[in-house]
Image (spheres, rainbow, N blue to C red):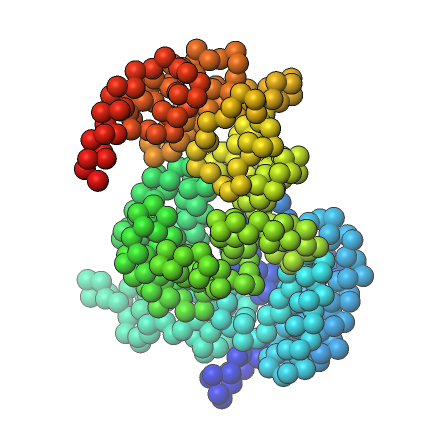
Length: 506
């Protein structure tokens, strides 16, 4: 590859040659978020079925694929031909659960004909539930910039590598130890440090993924503490800017969710933007808008979700303001080009329950459980679905609830299947209560109590648990309402006194 006179222009990746370009794209693909491994698919003489690269996702549920075009120039019709080649083997890849197709090209894609064709291909792939992207030489330069070791592996020109990744600290003077030449120049040392920094970033990125998984599994305090420690470690400043930005955005999200600290969250989000201005900040910016202005204002920012996290956030906002019809429209849409995960199905289950379709709600939440059985919110909604399966449709709430209201015995089903689901809900909430962190434990214990309170054979257990809840929190109005509805023999004198004092203070 030869350097370009105008350094603002992207490198001439086409000069690498077909196979080196393919290897570079493979290495870069493997470094993308959510990807576990990427390999070149097939060797000379073998059928490749419309792809050159096969990437496996970390979740193990799907694959992503790439096609490489080492062209000096690519036309709109050649972009279409690349898609046609893939679509001729579409069923093969849909069976393999393909989620994204990336067209890697070695040239620029600035012409309107090229951009119009890319938009057409996006629409074409979305109809099949596949995300389409085209990475030009300019995109490749941007995505390659944090990975100097990949660039140096495939590009012989140090000047071009410096243009892509930034120059290393250079000096012609050698280090001296006891008056002898150490034989290590500052330039070489800088190169080694760059490689070490990249390897360190990769390890910390894995740790960040683990922290996110702990949070999803309900270990909120532990995850937040680990994230704070990761940010405070001495090695933090050595991490790549994109990774530091991810850490800051995650801290901002947890700060909003757990502490409702707007000032700190906004400060963290702004710092992340300075480090990586090209990153997708939709979720954190929308979350800030939600806490400042409410769900309606936040929804205006995400009318067209671009990825799974944004889609889920939009669905949650729609659920909060009661627009379940729009959630069900998304559920019924044929391939929106965005991968749906266990969290998506959890929200679908709530919407279907509110609409009175308990069978479809059960189906969605069981799909979620099969995909992510350890996620806390998935386990909670699965137990909630079992709980309401044992009640009459008239007792199903018209909006998501944190805790269940008292239910008249007339609305409790007595058939074998309904009672079996109620018992399953009891076991689930008991386990969730035992394993939950402090802030979640009382909620899970109350759901366990409600399950017992609707079980004819377990009224003694329900009464005992009711007494224990009121001992811990005499002012629990909902517990008092259940006690009165079920006529439990509990002493409400302390509760009455606490509530009267509360009214006097207000």
